[in-house]
Amino acid sequence: MIITISKYFNHLIKYVAWVAILFLLGAMLITTVDVVLRKIDNVGIYGTIDLVQLMVMSAAYLSIPYAFMKKSHVAVSILSERMPEKAAALCQALGMVLCVIFMSAIAWFGFQQAEQQHQYGDISITLGLPMIYYWIPVLVGSALSGIISVGLLITSFLNLIGKRQNPLEEEGATKS
Image (cartoon, rainbow, N blue to C red; front, side, top):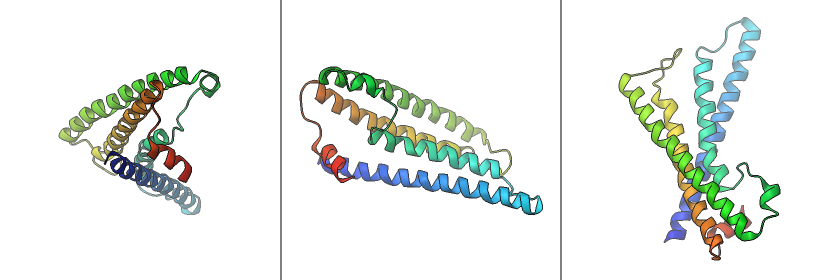
């Protein structure tokens, strides 16, 4: 049952990453069209800054869970590759503890700020978009990243005590 849940969660993270890519493509398209229109007749797209800011923020936060899942976040591999396996697993576990704390803090304090801005009815400057639209990707991305960090922490702990990693993780590594 845990492997089934993990499989569906991995698919969810991949779909969220695809949404992030679409947001990034949208930001590039809007920026490009805005620049071209300004060159042609000196009139751009109204609200470009609001839209691009929303899309880039969304792309950034929605792609973080995928980067964590693929373990493509920044690491000092020069040191960890030369360490004994147990020491590397301990460093990984400590790093994941910090990731869980950090991503959980972003989600928690972000939620509080989003709730406050929603109650006040805060909107973006040009288009008047509700600021909650800017917070939703931050909250989703940080919450999913925190969950993945917990999974990586468990995997690191299992490596530390000498148990094998999750077979689904090894299977996913060969299929991806």
